[in-house]
Length: 298
Image 1: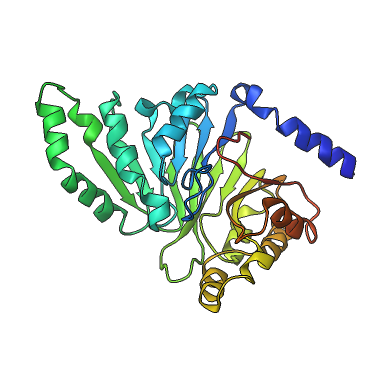
Image 2: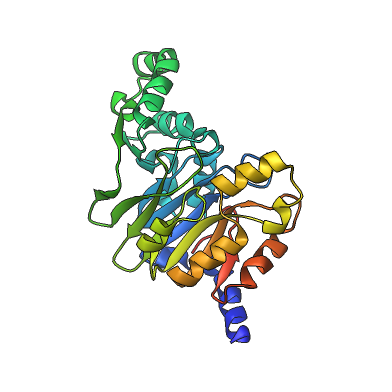
């Protein structure tokens, strides 16, 4: 069994060569955290279905990471095609790129508004960005650039738990998760014709996630190292244990959800290695689990 899993993991390492032939793909645009790791962009990922892209979260570097993914064979991730965004919660590391994804594609020939789905507060955040950049927007539309005013329109949708979006490619369902003091933090189920992909967002152990994620094809879940957290001060131990999911908690979640593939993102190692983080999970979970990296494709 171990040999078969190793073969499967080896095959996945070449998935980017053939990913565009599949109807549904998951692309990790950024797997970072608030720690300023120069090798990782901020939290963001894309679901690509039939050459349409759907972005989840917009950490630092989102538009440029999407442009890199476009070069890997996903034309729907060029800036002009970034038109649909889902936000899990309003923490800064997940939303700093909001101005980027609203404004940069507008400069680069987006021909439609951007539609944003997120918790209560996302409209105010978007409106404040537009207010902050009103001079820039005015000059770009009415100056020599003669920009398309439609590209600068933002349609903000404040969501509750349940089905929040549906088109010819997929259905998106939001579900509440526990993320410390946040009253409204969500995970998402992306259901396409060939895949059920579940995104945890930032959260601690969540029975509601287990309910919505059962038997999914891919579970993308945040995680922190249990052994690594013990090296931190009491203040941070209390914080992270209430806001995030430990390796052993995630193993318990995965044993109940039974995903075909568990992808780790937003990995908080606290000085431990990514490999030791993986080993902690594998000590209690026998399924296929992979450390997510920026621009990985599944």
